Image (cartoon, rainbow, N blue to C red; front, side, top):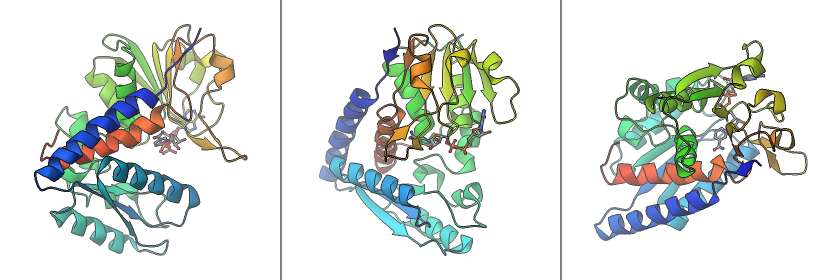
Amino acid sequence: MTAVLSGTELARNLRAEVTAAAAALTGAGTSARLAVVVATDDESSAWYVRSIAGAARKTGIDCDVVDLGPQAKPGQIRAALAALSEDPAVHGIMLQTPLPDGAHFEDLASAIAPEKDVDGANPLSLGRLSAGLPAFAPATAAAVLALLDHYDVPLAGRTAVVVGRSNVVGKPAAQLLLQRDATVAVCHRHTKDLAALTRPADVLVVAVGQPGLIKAEHVGPDAIVVDVGTNPTADGGLVGDVDERAVSGRAGGLTPVPGGVGPVTTALLLRQTIQSAAGRFP
Ligand code: NAD
């Protein structure tokens, strides 16, 4: 039996925590505020930003969407991030992707003040995380660990394999697993014989963006599989990177898509905004 490791309950608990903390902050005279900088007219990005803004407002966090338009120049984006970093009324800053041609995400995210970098986008945050120093982790990577903890998945001394090495998910997830004393391997598009590397994993984290990439042959018996992938389907739905039907019955647990990592990611982004507003850099 493969357990469904839903993120719904955890996300609900986190949102309740954030709502209480936001109300306490407001009572003390601080309105927590998240700013999302957008420079695209991409429809799925717009959907994601609307869902973050809606979730923020429901928990009592103000959310400003700073829409610079798809023609924005890198200099404008950088200037907007720098201005928000200086603005004492803003506590969390996110840079939404995709970016216009010629704009480099990590380069621009360097303009986000680390103490407001609630989605861990500034390379300084990833560097600090890697060095074991306090930093905001990218919310998605933090959500992977939060889900594993929620389901009491042991990590110390276990073999964890991360498929995907992006700066926003794969690399920080690997660093967070290392911090928890897992033995970590990272696979990517050049990995030869992916299944041979993933099969021994006690914990398999998949963040690629390729539906059905992970099949039964990639998963060892009783492995815990965290599916970070979100791939839109033709009928307007969403599927992960794991072939759910193929691995069920073999994996010990699998996070669903939708309803797994996604809602926890949003809730953690809000929690990190509250932490920043309360002056509690991690
Ligand atoms: P990315 O495109 O930046 O990185 C993808 C990674 O997958 C790369 O490191 C690449 O080397 C690797 N890869 C590609 N093909 C591979 C293959 N055949 N075998 C092994 N590795 C391969 O993507 P990302 O931003 O890291 O996002 C990954 C997925 O996670 C996407 O589906 C994205 O939509 C999703 N995502 C979900 C959330 C959430 O909150 N649930 C948040 C961020 C990203």
